[in-house]
Length: 233
Image (cartoon, rainbow, N blue to C red; front, side):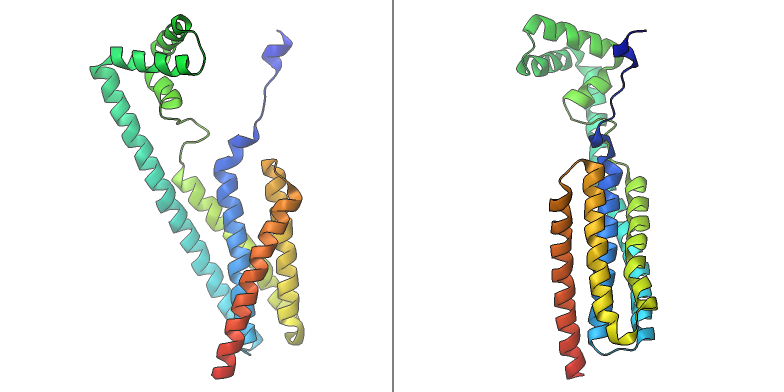
């Protein structure tokens, strides 16, 4: 067996489905829960009230993320299935036109017309729907929508992210609670950005700085609102 046949590549793009949902869920879990905790704490609430609010935020946020991801990705999946059904019907009713269409796609990519025709014929003989799904519609195993996978990944990662600032509430002394939760949450966000960038092959420093900035802004805003309403009430 040749070295070429033994060589198998693993591309980072294959992770995009679950990676996007997981990073989004964990980031939202840290930012929303930490911001909620900081906002409630700034309103001069007790430590037990802050913990209750944080746990409620975790439960509500995890369900919201799961439902939102499932509905969103299901819409994408429905669109893909509708396009595939239409393509399947066109292959049955007018296969010649579909062959010409696939030939044209390859020709526009730079393949000589005669060879493009030959490639299109061979691929359609093997699996016409897969050929058109991939090259005409842009649907493949990597890009295909998986609603349940996205929902579970988002809910689980949100819960893990939200648990981090909640843990800081438990271990922090009341006088330093806001400071410690804020500092720890920003550190968690930086680590999350670095891990997500590493898994996706992106710039670690840029990703860490990006999520840290938006997390700090969210906590600052909620702390200001909590302080304002705490003073008014």
